[in-house]
Image (cartoon, rainbow, N blue to C red):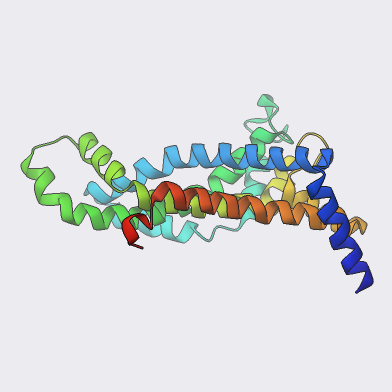
Length: 234
């Protein structure tokens, strides 16, 4: 118990004094996760809107695949990305393995199905309301998708938040493709695992506090952007 309180005190001190190593790891983690989130949203949101609006033969199959891939094991994603980016792999010549770019690729693959599936549910509901109106206006498919994405933006922020939460807490895939290299690819989750294994509980706890703080901060930001309580309405 004494060791626990001592570790908490040291962790609190590291956070308050903005320890250099702690800040470096936190910023790298945030940069990698936000980059992956941006790329994933560019892919997932239009895909979700297209599947909601367009009627085609394999539509149900695509929806089923998106839902199934929400539970995609991260370590499997990391292994597949590793194989593709390794020297003997088809993309090995690009030299991306054990770089932040490889970590962004792995996180993007993990969260695209999650964001797309959640977004599809919201867009599909809105499409049922807008269907007759948009059809009567004789708008193009692209205009339908843009309209739905804009009018459904608050719900899409929730989908993006879910993707951020999964990405920033990911450890298996980015450990495999990033290598947890100091001053290069070490992020919050991999650093916590490493420091815990070394018995450095103070730094591990401090990193954990920062990870929780980032998650809460992003939640609050999304909450504010979405105006979920504007005019007294939840």
